[in-house]
Length: 176
Length: 185
Image (cartoon, rainbow over all chains, first blue to last red; front, side, top):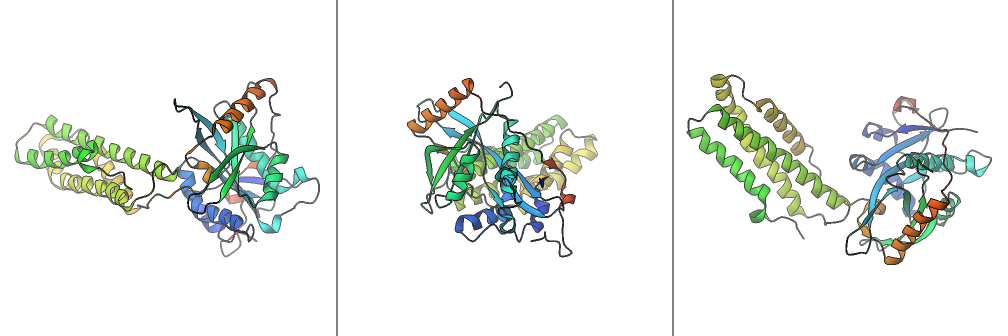
């Protein structure tokens, strides 16, 4: 198996991601912009971002892990803290690679790494969530393979009116 | 929509009082301890301004309040006001005090805060709404809240499998860079 290497992203690496290409669809271009422009702001807010490289050091993809809180609709204002994947993508030239079992593919390795990182904080944030663009059906199927369930919650962006679909997955706590 | 309310803002009033106190004290012959109190107030106000700014940035990032140009100018203006007063203190009053009393408590800290304020102003960038919708503020429907509670309850009986990742973490020197300084495609 061709195992990736994770490299913590810092603003000094912005110059190395300028040509990051993860597809032509709007939601794919948004992910590239997220990395090239927005990532430093997310780092400041406590989100962790990694670049992933193959054994030769070639950039393959990126992933991120943040924290958020969802408010319950009760009058006491209860909030649930959870881990959240703000953005994750594989460069177009590495899609479907390496050949072999799907669980060894780069996309799977990146997601497993992020889940393992989130697991370390599962006593505080026992659930991990993400939002998927409704057109990105391939991503929905991919996340389902890793235990993310459809969840009856959407977020409608007030500007674009796009209804993003939430998916959630419980994490293994240290005591379990 | 803006969150600015200068007249009712305690921070704004303290900022004004900070500026006034130095003008008044400059004219009077006061004991070193009184000057040190004024310096401590200046340092505390600076930290308060930073906390308020960070809280506002977080609210804009999470979509709790919309970005407003007036808020942006107000927060930036507070730092400018504080720095204008502090620059005068550092250039005029403080050197006099130090030559008169020797060490003045809080002086080094005030100089540090002034340097930080310079950075805050020169590197100022307006906050933006999080591009990742998942990090925005949101309230669950009753159905979604119940589903989340049920999921967590179910994991007590049937915990999810532990995820292991074989990936190693290395520093950025591992990333291959062509001569142009950009990563390979």
